Amino acid sequence: MTTSYPRIAGQSLERLAALSDGIFAVALTLLVLDLRVPVGEVTGQHPVWTAQGRSADRAAWEVLVEVGPHFLPFVMSFMTLGIFWIGQQTQLNHFARTDRHLTWIHLAFLALVCLMPFSTNFVGEYPTARIPFVTYWLNLLLLGLVLMASLRYAARHGMFKTDDVLGALRRRIVFYQTCYAGAMALSLVNTYVSMGALVLLQLLSALAPPIPPFDRY
Image (tube, rainbow, N blue to C red):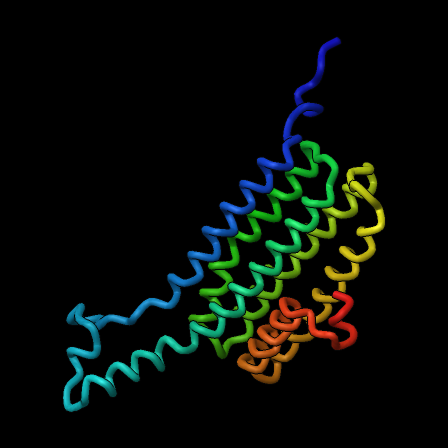
C-alpha cells in the first residue's frame, strides 16, 4: 500500500519546538536593535562630541531622552514575546502528536512572531500616533487567533495527551486578548498610558499574583 506524502509530513513535535525556540530567540534579539544610540546626521559623529556650548554629560542626557521612547516598546514587546513563547510551548508540551496541518498552523504563528520587531519599531518611531498601536494590536490579535486555531484543530483531531488542559488554555487566550484590546483602546486617550497598561498586563501574566482573575490565568 502506497503512503501519501501529506500523511507522513510535519509530524515531529521536537523539530517544531526547536524551530520555535530559534525564531523566538532571533525576534527577541532584534528588538534591542531599536535601542540604537543616535549619531549626527551631518558629521557622522556622536552628538556628545559635536555638542557646541554644552557639556558632554548634558549632551549624553539628551541622547538618552531621544532613545527613551524606544525603551518602553522594547520592554513591552520582550515580555509579550516571552509570554507567547510560553503559551506556544505549553501547547506543544500537551500535544501527544502533530501532523502537517497543525505544523503549518504553528509556522503561521511563527511568521507573526517575526513581525513583532517591525510592529515594535513602528510604535517606537511614532510613540504618539495611533496607527502604529493599531498595527501592534493586530499583531497581538493574530498571534492569539492562530494559537486558538491550533487548540481547535488539535482538540478536533484528538491530539492532546489529556483533555483537561484544553479549557485552561482557551480561557487564557480569550482573557488576555480581551485585556490587550482594552489596553489598546486606551491609546485613544494617551498612547503612553496604553503602553503602560500593556506592560502592567505582561507583568501580571508573568508573576501570576493571587489577585482575581489573574490568579486563574
